[in-house]
Image (cartoon, rainbow, N blue to C red; front, side, top):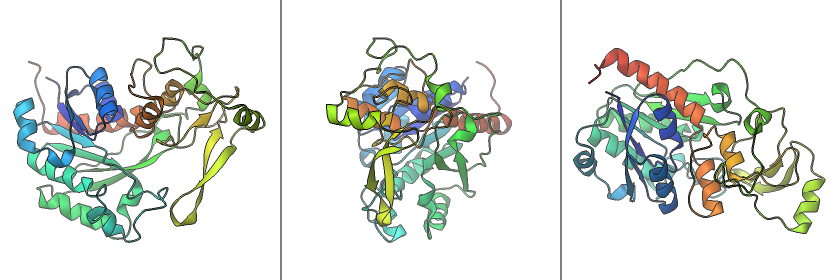
Length: 325
């Protein structure tokens, strides 16, 4: 019998896909983004998919659907209130958790963990969620709902076979330290054997249109260089529309980011960007093109999710062994 997983803030299912590849059964996902939850349902037809605001969901409702407490609760509350890429981030870190309406969603993750009482919980977010008193506050919140030990596991996606950069913290009641990949995976690795764009297979592989003016600017762009900069928190200049270097890992894939193909004068397709996040080619993204890019960029990279999931599975097999039914 497989260990069961409930995915809060499931998006299109990157975190869930990693757990599925590690042998878990995904039983339920929740997201208030209609296109994202449609994508989740298309990829996990066996699971319940709730298109709801998590503030309106109770643990009792979830348990009534799935029948018994899940073994694992995972989730990725929105990182916008905490990330340094957000120029409107509240100056006081605790305000980001308690006063920002989006930051308050973390509190609802904690609430549902307390109501569902899984054997393991794993919450993914940006490391800045630990800034200036937030770490102690999160530790206290999880302790208040019954989890005496709380670990803050900071992992780099590129250390776990992901061809793009990403640093994330996985907050859990167990220590998570998976073995690292033996080599780095590059943009070239991710895009090799990619079929010609604008074909039906694989899905989500259509080239976005480009103006003549932007096309000329892209043609002059060297690998690793951005077409534009935007302003992040505290006035930081952050690059976007970067031409990828095929010999390197890609920069962090974000919902707002678009990349330029390393050899061709065009943007990456949604499918190519999904490959940078380790999604299998049969993973479908529904909705408009911008929504699809957002679903890719807001996901947990699948290889990183799988590495985390294997650590969780090993813990469960040791602590809560289960016989095949």
